[in-house]
Length: 167
Image 1: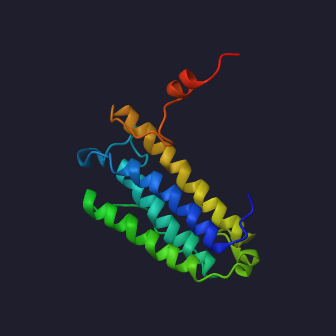
Image 2: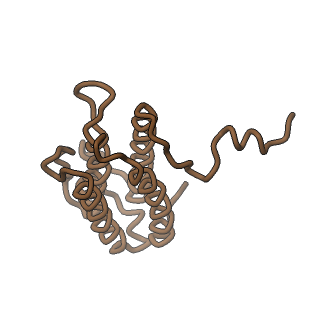
């Protein structure tokens, strides 16, 4: 998918974000520190990571600056309400940055953290893929805890199978 319009990108990204928020809203606050394995991201870390990397890596590099990502620890936000506020504020700031781009800017190059040049539109596409990747991990974490998670498009795989024709 090639991104040629800032506004159409933002419209699409906001739809992706709604699905991520729908999942975060079912996270039981008492499970924010859950991880499937010692030393791996907790649920809280996952949420802070999506937010922090969106703003401080993608947002900064789009501005032509170096990545300022400093991790996803509790020092950024602790507790469900604070994590959600941080998540939303980082997104608001990133959307503000993206909104300042022109459609022509999408073809401008920016530098990834290791110094590789990439078109801004490709970098924005990677940002969405990154969020979706971590949202998938959150689904697994919550399933391990037997937390009922929202269907991404309203139907489970089993429901789609039941609605499908038999070959």
